[in-house]
Amino acid sequence: MNYRHSYHAGNFADVMKHALQWACLSYLQQKDKPFWLLDTHAGIGMYDLLGEQASKTGEWQAGIAKVLAAPNPPDELAGYLAAVRQLNPDQALRWYLGSPYLAALQLRAQDALTLCELHPADAQELSENVANDFPHNGTIHVEAGRNGYAALKALTPPPIKRGMVLIDPPFEQRDEFAQVVQALHEGTKRWANGSYVVWYPIKDPVAVSEFQQRVADLTTVSKVYCTDMLVRTAQDPSKMNGCGMLFVNPPYGVVQQMATIMDFITPLLAQDQGAEWQGSWLLEG
Ligand SMILES: C[S@@+](CC[C@H](N)C(=O)[O-])C[C@H]1O[C@@H](n2cnc3c(N)ncnc32)[C@H](O)[C@@H]1O
Image 1 (cartoon, rainbow, N blue to C red):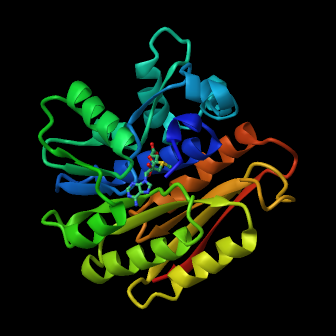
Image 2 (image 1 turned 90 degrees about the vertical axis):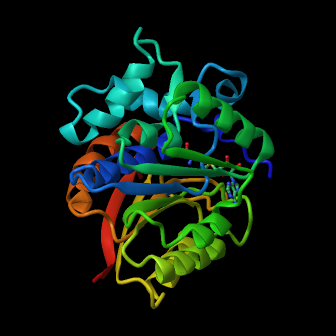
């Protein structure tokens, strides 16, 4: 396990992932009934963009920095951008929130959040961050050192019946797509009504289409939507030319909001003329 998210925090992939994560949880918040979020690959929760690792790549400058600086963002992005701004009150961008912190900000007293992080050092940091920044929030559970795929199988069906699983692996392993398909199968078999959101890199478009098709072929799913974004012309399949998100049972209304969000962020995150996004139903239920 070499991957450390601190090198990539706030990059174009984080912006897409976190903007759409925020939109999904906003929909779950619309009803008073509690929701549960399982974040299978949580990272450390909070990132210092001026720290050694983020500074080495500077990826956030072509990511969150561009979107924060852009005029007239749509209302659909307001909550996510306000969360980032709140952390950086003096205008200079330094701190960036990962998926656990964004989720924690949207949690109400009745909701619950489970965070899995396998890397020992990152798990330790996540535990300390959550204990320091959300000390009285008894509804956040950090599963330090726990494999998120195994947790998905073990913790479903959850006692809270509404909710979402966020699967955001590092894609270091060659069989990561296969592991995600298996995890989706295990989850949807046990918890058919849950929403499942998977982030994936777009390098080789053929591998991505095969992954999407294998999810659509699962007998346990009936609604699958995919949003793919290229930030540059996909000439070199060894590079991350973009990323996508696959939604099983997307929360109602999110698909409509997605177009507004993606239309706004894609040109801001573009690295050449080949930048574009598209969304489509693989299975419409
Ligand atoms: C892309 S990062 C997560 C970023 C985070 N979701 C966010 O948006 O802020 C992937 C994380 O998964 C961790 N990881 C890798 N394999 C894992 C597994 N099987 N279970 C849980 N965590 C894992 C890595 O250590 C890394 O911190």
